[in-house]
Image (cartoon, rainbow, N blue to C red; front, side, top):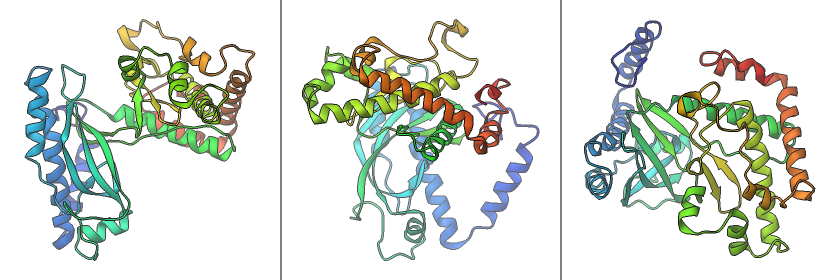
Length: 354
């Protein structure tokens, strides 16, 4: 509806149409359905606004204290869900989890929620009072787990949404081609102009976090947890690493994803490498497009995990998977229109994927 993050510049083509559509939908709600809608938007309005509340505080202990104080004021309302995941009912909030993120200019923060992945239909029945399961704080349901999410205000997450939608298409292509590759298109949702929710990758730490916790390289890190490379657990971790490395290498090449520093590369407990944060892609890159980053991030420590040299069997498998992934994307014509439709409005060079 808007062309800017502050809701000052209305989209001349879409604003009126979308505004009328929203008005029509909301006016059509009544009874429990309208109450459900109002609870959900009120609850996550309060959650998201914490980012704006803590922004005036200096980065450090003061901002963290303000974040925890603001989070504790938010009460769990029955029948609410994370905007990124309408399949999971929110049961509780971890009020000690409020952590401001690294950004100084803006103030994204992380919080954890206990959720029950009950499915959309059951969640709607709970939210509108037609289920016998109940819901809300203190309720015990089957399938409960913790989900961390990052909330942003004053930051446009739509490009991340776009990148992850394309990555999800690539994941479907790889599955259709029967390739043994791994991608994790985590969920990102823009909830308003300049506002968004980003679900965190579960059971994972960034390479930067690992570097601050230990002096080990990735090979030594995996060895310290899973034993030497002859062990079955190390071999499984290496296999997962190769499968994910090949998939993300091809994707970062095709989409020209940049800003691949250690804070934007995650390693999960099973050894998968997962790329996050897609603010720079296609023709944009950090430093005013200085172009100092390679098309594929392949460091010495990554090579070491894959056998240490090009002649090693795991590294040869990595290269074979990269070729297979690239050819699969070129050959599956049924997805061409879907990819180009997503990319047509933001890149004149998207046809290179074909």
